[in-house]
Amino acid sequence: METRILKIDAPDDEKIKLVGEILREGGLAAIPTETVYGLAGNALRGECAKRIFEAKGRPSDNPLIVHISSFDEWAPLVKEIPETAKALADAFWPGPLTIILPKSDLVPDEVSGKLPTVAVRMPGNEIARAIIDSAGVPLAAPSANLSGKPSPTSAKHVIDDMNGKIDVIVDSGECTVGVESTVISLAVNPPRLLRPGGITPEMLTSVLGEIEIDDAVFNKLPEGAEAASPGMKYKHYAPAAQVVLIKSSLTEFVGYVEKNKSDGTVALCFEGEEKGLTVPCLTYGRKNDPSSQAKQIFDALRRLDEIKAEKVFARLPEKDGVGLAVFNRLIRAAGFNVIEL
Ligand code: AMP
Ligand code: MG
Image (cartoon, rainbow, N blue to C red; front, side, top):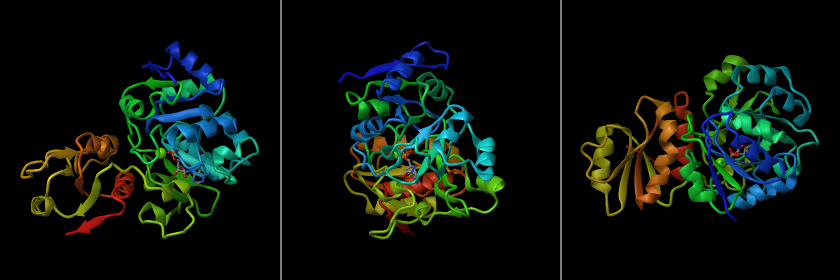
């Protein structure tokens, strides 16, 4: 099929009506959000979710996040909104936080991956909210990448993966956060962080008090274990190259790469650390600036494929603040392969 590419830079752009119409009629549109580009379809129609899974090549037991543009759209999707959920939404919506609660019958099984719960988020990006408004229905929207590939943070990434597979791609520049939303489940007690993102554990505890961090945030799930968040069990964010994370000082990192390099070796480091390395280097942000790392990590992972990297030695990010999200994505890209020097 032919995919229309629409450049939209403001929430009052006339073209938003057209995107809304396509979505309302059951079409698929890649839309910008502050986290990553989403592949959106009508969240109240099971067959739209099926088309999303098909376009992504995503296993259909991996549930989709439902995106809303106003608080009123939330209540019909869930059994009830407890005080804790309301407090979280008041603090962080619109923004990069997804809240899981027991679902109502309005949410099709295809969207929830047959789980009894639904994940809901109100994106901070104004163009995203204007598109949801224009569609007049909540939108199911996973990241707009082919399953397994790094999430898209620019329209170019989406075009590379989705051109010819969906009705429209909205190009609205680069995503400001750069990693997917924080996912917290309030369907369990205490609340459980399933995926770290732009809203940090410290920000969550400031509202909720105690939270638990799911083991799958840090570690590989044991063979056959059931994932609290089904997305955690799939190989994710991975470039074609073999990625190895190196936990060490910069000097040790440079020494290790120089000693172990071969044809096709690439170093993935922080800005300004390229000196002393004789292999090609890509960077992802500044060492003590996790927000800059989050913004650049997926682009860097995609570039590794473009330059045909075969083996990648990568600097390990700190786990502070949004750095935990960067760590979580990189460790999956590396298939949990970490060497401590
Ligand atoms: P993406 O749509 O690519 O941002 O991924 C959504 C993530 O949220 C995946 O890891 C899903 O497994 C997770 N998720 C969505 N809905 C639920 C739910 N009801 N329960 C647990 N995890 C969920
Ligand atoms: Mg994804």
